[in-house]
Amino acid sequence: MQVRAEQVRAKTTRRFLLEAAARLFDERGYVGTSISDISAQSGRTSGAIYFHYASKENLALAIVEEHFASWPELIGRYRTAEFPALERLVALSFDVARAFRDDVVIRAGARLWAERTAIDATLPRPFVGWLETVTGLLEEARAEGALAERIAPDVAAHGLVCAFFGLHTVSDALEGRRQIEEGLADLWLLLLTALQPECDARALIARACAQGERVRGAARAQARAQAPDQGRERRRPGARQPRKTTRNKLLTGHLDIDHRTRN
Image 1 (spheres, rainbow, N blue to C red):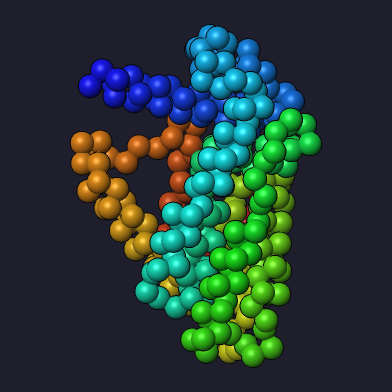
Image 2 (cartoon, one colour; image 1 turned 45 degrees about the vertical axis):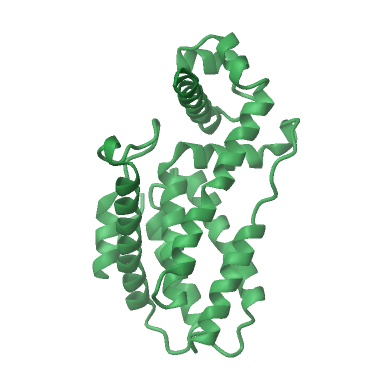
C-alpha cells in the first residue's frame, strides 16, 4: 500500500514538473529556459527536477512525447463516431485547434519540436499520423459519395495537413491563436467547396461543430464514470480557458465569417 502511494506521488510530481517546464518552454523556448528557471517556476529544487528528469533534454523529450501521445485517443473518438466522414474531419480539426490554443503541454511540445535542432535528443516524427488519419477519413467520405470524383484522398490529405498546420503557425505568430477557430472556419469554407460537389460549407461546418460537442460530451461523461471520486474535470495548470462564444456561434451556424472585425 505504501509503495503504491509513493508511486502515485512520484507520478504526480513528474506531471507537475512537466507542466511547469512546459509553461516556460512555451513562453521562452528551449534555449531561453534553464533548469534553474524551471526550479523557480515550480518551487522545487534543481536536485528534485534531476531526480525525475535526468537532463533538460530529457524533460523536453518528455513534453514532446506527451504532445504526440495526446492525439490517438482524440482521433479514435472521431474515427468511430457515427456521422459523415467529412463532418468528422471538420469536427476533429476544431478539437485539435482548441487543444493547441488551450493546452500548454500541446503548445510547448509544438514549439520544442520546431526548435528540435537545439535539443540533443531524438524526437518523434510529426505529421505522419495526421496524414494517415486525414487520408482515412477522406477515403470514407469517398465511399459515402461525399467527395468530388477528381479528388485523390492521399493527395488531398497532404494539402489539408499543410494548410491546417500552416494556419496554426500564422495564427500563433499574429495573435497567439486567439482567433484560431475563426481562421479555421474561413479555411474550411475554402476547402470544402473543392472537396465536395455542391457543398453548403457553412451548414456542414455548423453540423460538424454540433456533432463535435456531442463527442466531447460523451468523452467527459466517460471520464467522470471512470473516475467518479475526482469530481469536476480538472484543467491542466497553465491551460487557457476555452472561448465559448465562438464555439456557440459555430454550433448555431451564426459565426459571422464575412463581416467580423479582426484584431
